[in-house]
Image (cartoon, rainbow, N blue to C red; front, side, top):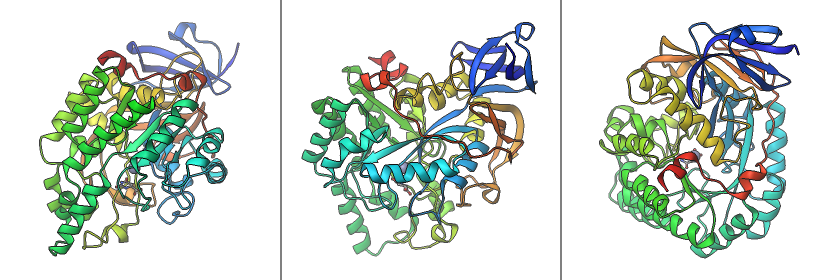
Length: 463
Ligand code: DOR
Ligand code: ZN
């Protein structure tokens, strides 16, 4: 058998650890892993000497803004940023215009994305106060999961009442798909925001005070209780507090079907950085005070938190430059900076490379029902691969980002460890920072095993 491509001389990060292997690719999939002597004949050879070969990152949380907000991002620019950051699969959020709230809006987004996307993608639907009757159709149209915004955020989608959440999650349980929450209490956020505004505050730190830790803690606790009552599998998005992580860990120990993600910004920044970064750093939930980050690292290591996702939330630079905190939108891009930032942490000894791969490839693929097609280098999986140079140094510059949102809280950060080549289903789409592929991204449907319900390895470890 002659294969299409062989990636030789690299160190391949498999579930069993880094190994010197050749990866053989045929018809978009990995067909063999072998030492070089036993590699099948290949039409094309990619030399990965001095490089590590990772599964392409499965990025569980992006806002690619299609349709309706494409001045901030679209699937073309977002997926270009993704592949330049070593990401080969994204899960796109439903707070677009229109929101992904019924089958028709999901199909519309699918068509727009398939025309432009360099990466494969899954779409989440949204649960609103008034769309219960649309949800079955939304799932049948291919939603990978259903998201609830428990508190008001970008898009101003109203939080459903608890009764509506319970009904919707019972349906999700019946249909076998996970539910996801943006866990901030709308009641508490509204109360705190109004108090600060009435008091005349408009500085960047007021945002941090407007969305206190208790708002996340209360919402996560309520979500865990409601999901258990509904029998639904719950994924808690962007956990920012130590308390939130502890609640997820406790629910897992009780046997709950719960998973959680945190983000590079909660792991690397702290609220005091707002004094320097202003509204560039504004995001929901806010970056917390010193101390939370260390506990979020612990939660990853201990298995309370399963995955790392970026919450890539692009806005235009001029929007982010507004001085009045209430007028600047929340969020900043992350899909291109995550891998170098995290490889820098690997180099610093904060985590092992295979832990990072578990948290940013394997576990998100499991959570969203895409494993083992995505998230792992093994025979039969899609040939989504990211070659990284762990020794190469670089400096993060907003101006170099491929997102329409040339904004980053990491401006000037020195990193060590960068992606040098990204392949999506066997096609090279990025080489040395240059885009070289065509848009061939496809929408991903949940697998049958996923519908039967299965948590991540880390959840299993804790339970
Ligand atoms: O900061 C945020 N930005 N948090 C969200 O929940 C939404 C996101 C966005 O869409 O910009
Ligand atoms: Zn988000």
